[in-house]
Amino acid sequence: MTRTLIRTHAILTMDAGDRFLPGGAVLVEGNTIAGVLTAAELAAQPPASDAVIDARMLVLIPGFIQTHVHLCQTLFRGLAEDLELLDWLQHRIFPFEAAHSASSMYASARIGIAELLRGGTTTIMDMGSVHHEEEVVRALTESGMRAFAGKAMMDVNTAFPPLKEPTAESLRSTLEQAHQWHGSAGGRIRYAVAPRFVLSCSDALLRDAYAMTADFPGMLFHTHASENRHEMEAVRARCAMDNVAYFNHLGILHENTCLAHCIWVNDDEVSMMREHNAAVLHCPSSNLKLGSGIADVPHFMEQGIRVSLGADGAPCNNRLDMFREMHLAALIQKPGYGPRAMPARTVLRMATAGGAAALGIGGETGSIVAGKRADLQLLDLNSAWSAPAPATQDALASAIVHSCTPGNVHSVMIDGAWVYRGHEHTTLDVQRAVAEARTELDALLTRVVP
Ligand SMILES: [Zn+2]
Image 1: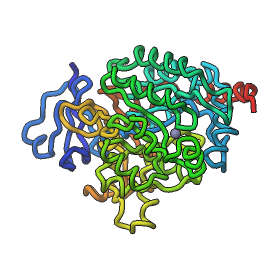
Image 2 (image 1 turned 135 degrees about the horizontal axis):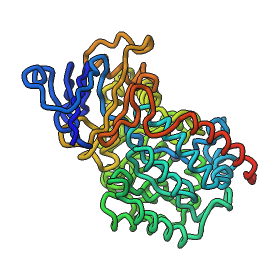
Image 3 (image 1 turned 120 degrees about the vertical axis):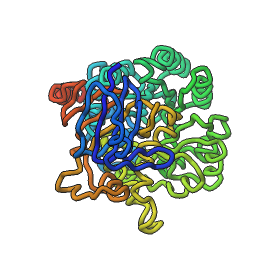
Image 4 (image 1 turned 180 degrees about the vertical axis):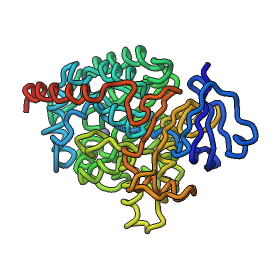
């Protein structure tokens, strides 16, 4: 197996001890981090390697982990503006998703993946649409991305009836897909069952979808919860209780339950999330743009609840950009909690090791530790908007969280393979992906039934 030594300006390992290694190096062997060296260790005894990459002008950090995205929606970027959640779904997103063909779904996924990779994201959890999930998985597999993916399960839809399936069909196709893709692509692709949200799911669908996870080690249950006040009114009207309390009542609130948003949760529900160790998928730009509210992330973290970050779908953020999510995750808490809340190092951890913990794969990725998979990114902080960035742990974390953009990402490695190197994609042709996205969107818009 090829051994590659990457010499750096500095490494933010994001490991359990939060080690910072100025002048450090990483040895990658196959798909694994074989060694993490301090500058002194490197000088004393450079390890044997087949290749040396001189990245002494670059900062090495783990790849970002976005735990909540919708690749199926990337084509709809900019086409669902200034609406709140239920109108946004009913009048834009549901009709758009229902109009997808196999080829438009593939184009939507590809352009989203291109954006994610060049922005340093190496692992995602994706919620698909009701149909054409195979195209999302195909694009993920080809791209080199590490991912949890799953079709959206919907057996109720009073807002837009064409976008749903009979309960049995939703469960049958989900089970078939889970058998097909959980652990595929050398373990890079895993399945997450994805009932969309309470209002699009019967009790039976929610319960049986959760039950399915017991048969597949490492499978996650991925859904939206408590995002919007009007959504909460509708949930209470149907279930006679609040959203997370309802999940608890159904027995589907556990360690592999991943809840996007969690803005409108009460104290009892926070206790339930803590007791059952459910994970929160925090999407600050989406929550602000849809006017949904601000999740009480500092409180969740104080309670020991796992919190991770995601951009959500392109029509509600409107970029799948972890740098912006980190910046906003910090900023939106400061008016309420004061300027010391959500320091940059805490937010950077949420975007890396915290994401891995939320997905239950902390032993595999999310930090730069010998034995873990080589999911890495090299950042060039020598841009006018991020310089001077002195080589201290706090200054570099601050530059990454508050100053950087995807333009600072120099190279990205997933599972030991470069997927973006020297500002160039290696696994897809981005010009072609953009051109195809335009063509597919034009065709899709002719198929939309309002
Ligand atoms: Zn979402």
